[in-house]
Amino acid sequence: MPDPVHEPSPNRPPPATPVPATAPAPLRIVVADDNPVVRAGLTALLGTRPGLAVVAEAADGRQVCAETLRHRPDVVLLDVRMPGADGISVLPYLVRLAPVLMLTYSRETETVHAALARGAAGYLVHGEFTAEQLITAVGEVAAGRPVFSASAAGVLPAVPSPRGRTRRRGGEHRA
Image (cartoon, rainbow, N blue to C red):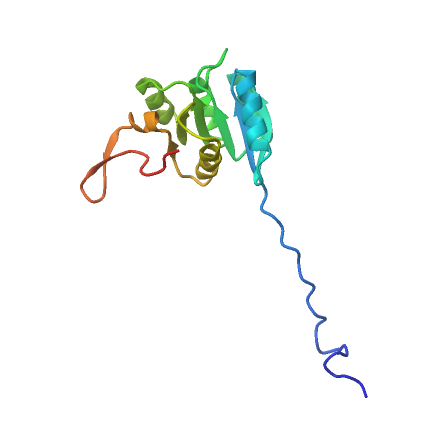
């Protein structure tokens, strides 16, 4: 006797084949710093993490512009002081292509303000964050949330909050 439950029927579609879940595409990162040791360290750290991929490195402003245009990354990590065109100078161009997280030793008030005025999505000062905080910061910036290390957050302009209290720009997103 035929088994009607397991027999193919012309009126019933074939059973669905499960589609394997695919991992989301990794966040693509361009690392720009004139110090080759810093570049190599950042590339090694970020490139070995699941969900992150360093697609290019750059040693100066002109090179980071070319690599960002070429690779269209999700985030650019940008040093302030580089030979030729520095990070602050190329920032207005880069932010039209990808969110930019300043990653630098420069903690001067004027430099932080200049980076923010030119569109930086975040500002981390070396020595003020851990490797895990950097990885988190990359994801935050890619998601459109600003991130600041302590000294950068300390010089942010105060803005009124919706509750009438004054708070620092950047809110709670600190590395």
